[in-house]
Amino acid sequence: MTSEEILQRVKSHRGESILQAEVALGDAVIHVGPDALHDTVKFLKDDPELSFDYLSHITGVDYLEQERDLRFESVYEFHSIAKNHSIRVRVALPEEKPAVPTISDLWPSAVFPERELFDMFGFHIEGLANLKRLLMPEEWEGHPLRKDYDLNWEDVAFTYNIDTKRELVKEKTLSRYKPGQD
Amino acid sequence: MGLVDEAVNLLETELNNVKLNIKDVLDQVEYEASGAVYDSILTTKLGNVIGWAQKNALWPATFGLACCAIEMMAVANSRWDAARFGAEVFRASPRQADLMIVSGRVSQKMAPVLTRIYDQMPDPKWVIAMGACSSCGGIFNNYAVVQGVDRWVPVDVYVPGCPPGPEALLYGIIKLQEKIMAEAGSDKAGLRAA
Image 1 (cartoon, chains in turn purple, blue):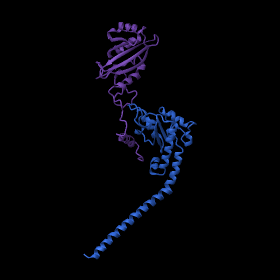
Image 2 (tube, chains in turn yellow, orange; image 1 turned 30 degrees about the vertical axis):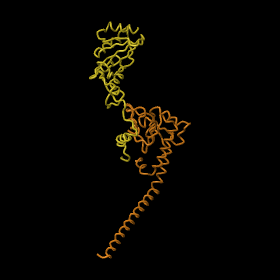
Image 3 (cartoon, chains in turn green, blue; image 1 turned 90 degrees about the vertical axis):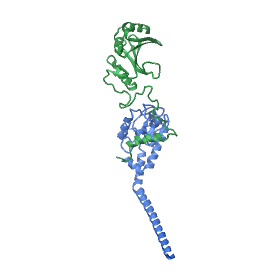
Image 4 (cartoon, one colour; image 1 turned 135 degrees about the horizontal axis):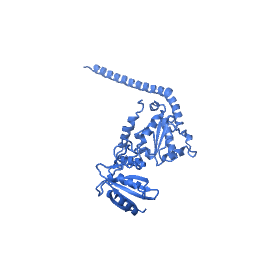
């Protein structure tokens, strides 16, 4: 099916839950709310005409300082191996409490990408049993892929701040390995 | 007060000064002599032998982290041949190794693992930070990478480069050997072995 036909079919069956549908650079894209996400993707999977049987990937977007009502977006890409067509589902999420339902009951492979969403963007994945950080250490603070996360981790030691690194090393390593302490 | 009393006082002061000076010189001689005896006969000679043995049998832990590990592996090949310096035996177990070559960027999650491997190595042990990333974070000034492995383990030799070639790493190993010999027999070497 072409992208236009996919959108036509989705709209005719789930028109009430679709906020917006467009063809972006040839790809079929639908926008849904977080409440309608699970129902919509279940339809995408079960419908014999569409039969999106493969979850390509899940990712997040942070639209900080852009003209948008909702800061975050959770993006799902589905592909149909049998029909060889694809669709993208975008879910806009508010800044205060970004929460999105899990789709790992439909696609078990969604568990890791959803944990990564939680790790990197701080989205709360509703219904995901093992909601822990995937990539960063578990006691890590902050969500690194948010736009307001510091890009530079640490001042680079130059001549003007030559003691910076020395102090950090003293504080971290020498406290752990004091020569001859044991 | 007569002139005689004044002369006596001066003489006594002078005598005291001379006595103190002689005592200082004697203390100094005694200190130097004791050090010479202690260093030359007992510890230094044996320490030099031990240091010589240690520097010519540096067994690195098999611990490759990133692209620097490729150059580290090349060091063991016939072309550069670290066996000439006794550092070719890469041990698969940290308990048999005494040199850790941190070859590559250390991610935040890898750092506790690296520290554990370092802790498992028997004393005395040495660490070479190979490449820009393990020395200072390199180009990865971000949340994912430790900004210098010296935050986690004490580093003896830093080898700069991105990545440093095998000859640079060999030079680092030679520098480490020089350091081991320079420390041999001293208190520092004793603390390492403790």
